[in-house]
Image 1 (cartoon, rainbow, N blue to C red):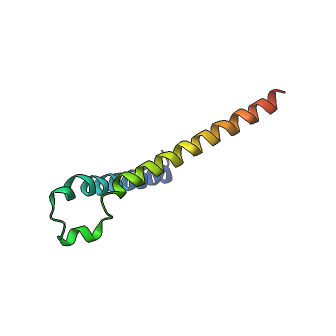
Image 2 (cartoon, one colour):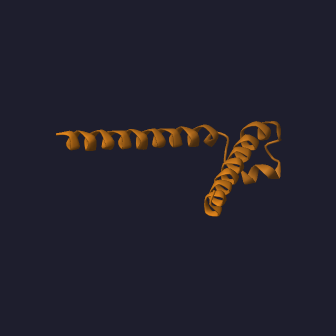
Image 3 (cartoon, rainbow, N blue to C red):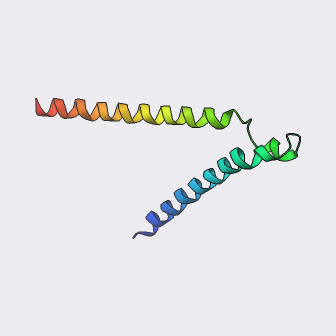
Length: 80
């Protein structure tokens, strides 16, 4: 395996684990902490814990559908 591939894989793993840890702490742990505690200033309001993943999922699904449609149209033109 090339060193650049290994570095990219490590970076992607680190970013994914960081996002997972942040989201887990935000959703699960902060619900048990008092709302006037200073740690709440580092996180968005709780309603964004649902809004952000929903919009990300809709955007990802839209991009996937557009890609599949593009590939289908391109393959249809090629066979005709």
